[in-house]
Image (cartoon, rainbow, N blue to C red):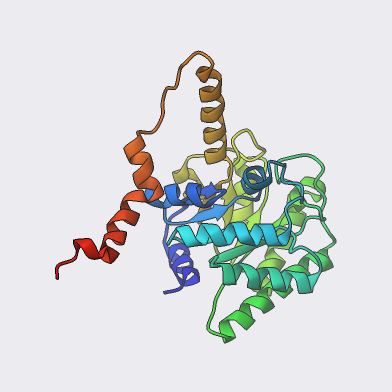
Length: 292
């Protein structure tokens, strides 16, 4: 069963999946260890983690795919990857989809922002015209079809940020066209109220994703409400990074006074990283411990 098939099966369930977002292999591994069924590589968090810079189109295609590959190597749950604007024209979008599939991702997100893109909950967003937006999704779907003809698979997560500049109706119209073009999952970014979220889900077919940024534009609703509204996935792109950064800053400040509280036990830290599994497996190749 491919990762794309696993993701399709999850989306067929009558529920809203809580999806903590990762930013590197370790954060993804912790998500999987805690029993979550899927994760998303947040572009915001990956940019902060990998290059220590904001998510303003500074990471290259190669860097993002490499980050996704490392994550996929560390987990067995489906990864949804952030493909930004596709890194160029429609042909670049095709390469982006194929590259993430080869890296092991189950899905890739393609959006309609102008390049360089911005985080969906920060100022200065602008979107391309309808025709260019539709061409990106058409190219992504064509790349998926080519993958399937060769025995591969990939889900297309189509995102629109049109709500910010052009209003909710334009965002819904774009997402509806994305679905007609063959997108598997729809993502209308930054609706500003529960009523807007309900309007989005009522108007659009198929699986929809909510993006919950603590302190962002979209209401932070309980999971049962999100399911009732009609979402299949609730993504939390910055929760883990915000928690990790807060813990690190608190610890760094405390170390000045010889205080190091709330640390993970060294034994659990080793286990979660994989030392115990490594040593157990490596014993199979220790001739001194094998029976003769």
